[in-house]
Amino acid sequence: MDVPGPPREEQLLAGLARLGQAVRMSAWRNAGPHGLSPLQADILTFLAGDDRPRRQGEVVSALASTAPTVSDAMRALTGKGLVTKARDAADARAFVLTLTDSGREEAVRVSAVPEPLRAAVAALEPGDLAAMLRGASAMMRVLQERHAIPISRMCVTCRFHRPNAHPEDPRGPHHCVFVDAPFGDGELRVECPDHQPA
Ligand code: SF4
Image 1 (cartoon, rainbow, N blue to C red):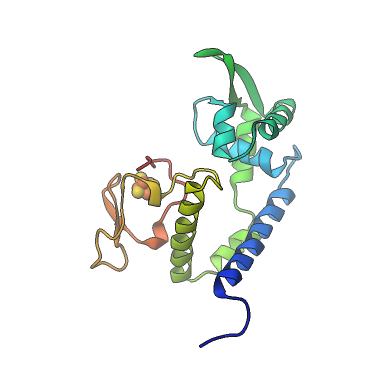
Image 2: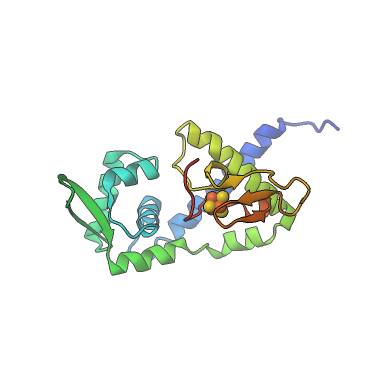
């Protein structure tokens, strides 16, 4: 049936834009006691994702931002006592960044899913959730390849991912070699600590 109105691709993009707006608004409302901007919150989350100190250039690449923008945000974060900056032992010209104890606490706080978004996700049927994960992974892969978004450690770009390895099993058609287990679209990861690039 042909329904009048813009094509469905445009409808999808309009829906994604609305969802993005909700996520951005939640991030601004979640500024917390340190008045974090969304970028500052993203930097804390990124630094908390790995115990080793990170160079500023790594933050720029991971967040698909620019050096001056990240530099401003880092200055604000060190001023708030959430991040420390020190000379890199491997290269005296470079600096490495580490979370302070307060920074780690803030990273945990900003990582929690805000209530309105949690309620919206909880309203999804399991099949819809799986379809959205599959669709989001496919779109993110293309955008990553075009350097339009930061790199995510997701199944569809992981060397352990075997898509449709079990076509006879509709509930678990894929296989993760890392944990040696089948899984379905509903378990697709868009951020996995065990990811290794394919
Ligand atoms: S290791 Fe993680 S990212 Fe890789 S396939 Fe398994 S679950 Fe997915």
